[in-house]
Structures are given as structure tokens and as C-alpha cells.
Amino acid sequence: MEYKTKIRAFQNFRTEWSRVKKIYYVTIFSYEETISRVNDELETKLISNNNKFHYKNELISRSPSELTRNLSDRYANMLRESLFVRLISIMELYFNDVLLELGEITLNPFKTEGTKEYKVVDLLNISDIKEIQNEIIQNKVRNVVLGGYKEINKFLRTKLNINTANSNLDETEIKELYSRRNLLVHAGGIIDGIYFDNFIQGGSESVGKRLTVQEDYFIASLELVLNYVEFVTIKIEEVYDFSQLDLKRKQIKQAKRSQKLSNKTRELSCTIIFKSKQDILTYLDRQSEFGFDNKYLLGSILTETIEVEDFIVKLTVKGRIDIVGTFEGYYRMLKRKEIINDFTIIFSQLYTTTNDENWNT
Image (cartoon, rainbow, N blue to C red; front, side, top):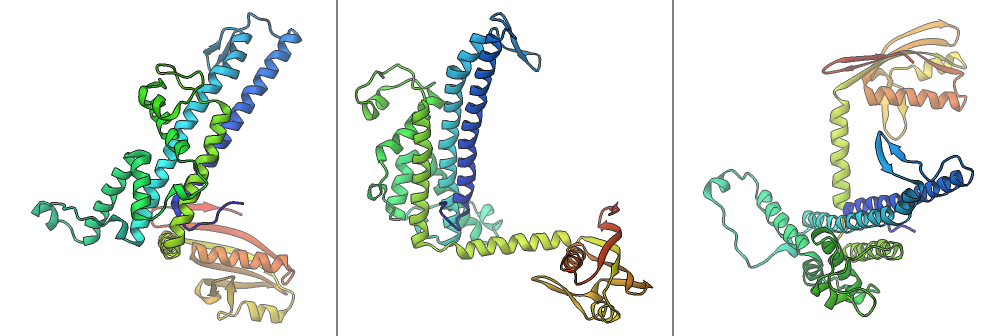
């Protein structure tokens, strides 16, 4: 069961984490299917051991055995290494984003006794103290995240009272994730003395040998990272309320949507077949309301009504695109519930502030 949260950083992390996991399984599945197909074609002599393989005019393998060997070993290892690096990156991005979100709720975790100097010209160009606060928070968050697990863990422990030592998580395993990623990215995966002393106890690995990302390790890392990030998220939400920040974002999004819609007008002509004369009088009264959660007056968009014959009315409305869209949806609902006999669009046209776009329905 997925953890429900108002923290956007965790929502984004979980989406990216799921993509990494799915990319791995889908790709390995395609590798195994290709290996199976190639082996089958060899057995049935559809291809020979001398067959070369091309993709988009590029030579990808000189023989079936080379292709299957690379897919099962070399390419699979390269895939895991790449996705492992991506996994740690999205974890770091989570910490960056969640701390910035936290800064929108409270400044307390970012308060220090340090000083910061500004040039007079810079201060005179600042119109809101919030700009300075945001800059201080962003710099602090950047330094914490770039400091790796040590600095992130320190900030969580000292500023947010979140201690992974009090969880079921293995801190050594989390530290090793960061160290392995750094070796893969910055040292070609070659084990150095620091990594060896901190994380290798027995086994065949030694200084100078190249680390690999085996499947069991990669899958375990996926779960460890998810559990770690989820643990931090839960602990943060136990102390800080993100619901108001979530509501504020939704309001801003709705305001932007309304502003965008206000620049578009739609004209719609339709025929409606009512069940009775009384229904016509009721539904086509200019003071009648239509809609679902939001209600609108028909008179606000009605431009023309023509009674074609008994109970059949041709009607034209024009107004903001979302209101006209609600009108259309409302009458389709009346037809579906058999409150009216029919609703058919004859013509529909969209007007914008920059250009006109027409379509027929």
C-alpha cells in the first residue's frame, strides 16, 4: 500500500523511482525475449552462427553468440549501473526538494548564527525580504545535498530530529549506496582504500578491482532507497503540516487555469429534443441553472433559441470555454439519464485572443 502524502517531493520521487524499476524489468524482459528468439532461430536454422545484426544501419553484433552474451551479461550490467546512478540521483533530488518545501512552511531549521553580506546595490534591488530568505534556504539546501549522506544525515538529525539509527534501516548500507555511486561516476567503479576499509569485509573484492551492480544488489537498493525516503517523509509529516502548502499550490494552479480559460471563448449550436413543452419552459428559462459542482445561469451564455417543431429546439450558446463545456456535459448527462430525448451538436467554434480555431462535431 502506497504511503499517502501532501509532500510533493515524495510524490515526484515515487514516480521517478517507479520508472527506474519498470525500465529495469522491461529492458531485462526484452533482453531475455531476444536471447530466446535468437536461440530458437539458430535451432531452426533461420539464422546461422555467422549472422550479423544491425539496427538503424548500425552494426550491433557480429554473431548470435556475441549478441546473446552481451545481452545476458555486459549490457545487463551496464543497465544496472546506469539505473543505480539514476536511483541515487533521484534520492538526492528528493532531499533537495523536500527541504525547499519545508522552507515554505517554516524557517526554523535553516536558522544559524552565521552572517551574510550583501552589496548595497543588491539590497536596493530586493523588493521583498522573502527573496533573501529564499536565497539563504536554497544555498543551505544545496550545501547539505552536495555533502552527501553525511551532511544530509546531520541536517536531519540536528535540525529535524530525524535519526535513521532509530529506524529499521541499516545506516551502513545507505552510506555504501552513496559511496558506490561516487566510485561508479568518478572513478570508473574502481575500489579505493576508503571504500575498502569502510564496506568490504571478506569476499573477493579488493582495492583496484572494479565494482559491479549485480541484480540482487540493484533490487535490494531499490527497496532500501524507497524505505529510507519514505521513513524521512513520514517523520517530517509527523511534525510539519504540508496541507496548507498543498492547498495553496492547488489554488495557484486553479487561478492559472482560470486565467488561461478566460482568454478562450466557445460558440456552440445544438438541437435538443425535450419530452414536453413544460420541460422547454423550465430548462430554457434564462434564469435556469446548469452544471455540476459549479452552477451557471443559462442566460449568461444563451444567444439564440429557435423552436424547430414540437419539443425540438435549436439553441446557440457562447461564452468562456469551460462554461460552454460544462453546458455540453450537463446536457449529455440529461440525455444519458433520459431526462431529455436527444442532444446533438451542430456546430462548435473556438475563439482565442490570438487566433481562431474551428471544428465541427
